[in-house]
Length: 331
Ligand code: ASP
Image 1 (cartoon, helix red, strand yellow):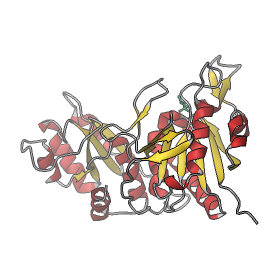
Image 2 (cartoon, protein in one colour):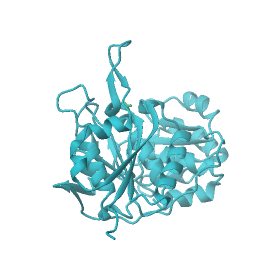
Image 3 (cartoon, rainbow, N blue to C red):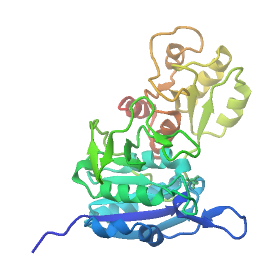
């Protein structure tokens, strides 16, 4: 008997790719099911992939939560354990850079998990949802994406969840990996991978029912006000600082950050969006070496939004300062 072809499970969660004209608001809102999305791609009948659809949510991606993504990761695991070759998640583009990274951190297997969506909704000329969904399914069905964790596929480019950013509000080429670029492309419907970086081991999912830890994200700015950070951080279980340049804040911010770092994990990242936080170049008050010497943890090359997700998952799992520092050092 011939061995069955690849089987891909598509989890639909809403977003622009699944939006239609809404009578009430006059704008578009999530209304399409996963079956509707698949039906809009007739080419799927020709590629020899068995496609199964699960409607997970039908929301704009701003309304997805940490708990939703943890639950989705569990459903993906069950589908893969049930024999699926790979999984595709369709969702709103606004939070893909965070959800895909959380899925990546939680995904321990070699099976591909591919996230996609659309920048142009289905009522627009040249809507990109069908092409992106086709490319995502082709990627999830392919052996060449195995072992790469969670990837984001838009405009025929494959980006690592760890690096991908939404870098434009409307362009169909909005998804980029600043500083590193895509890890591959689709050529005539087949993904091609240029170079596969090593993967970190998966992290455990937080215990079900536990509230997500509160992780504040503070962006350092010209004339930053320490009182504002102090007010917010009073509620926080951890803080990510999107610092200036290579990891700098004003001298005025140092006492509050040093005080916080004695109490809760504080991770130092850069608001520039590419390149590493340095460790030993600058020596002024508020410099990277000053802050790292005061128990702040280096976020390395992680973007502040990704660092916030990693810290949230680590704190949810009960990790202490040393384990958090080790996890960030592992990249
Ligand atoms: N503009 C968004 C999108 O591209 C809306 C959302 O994230 O749900 O899907």
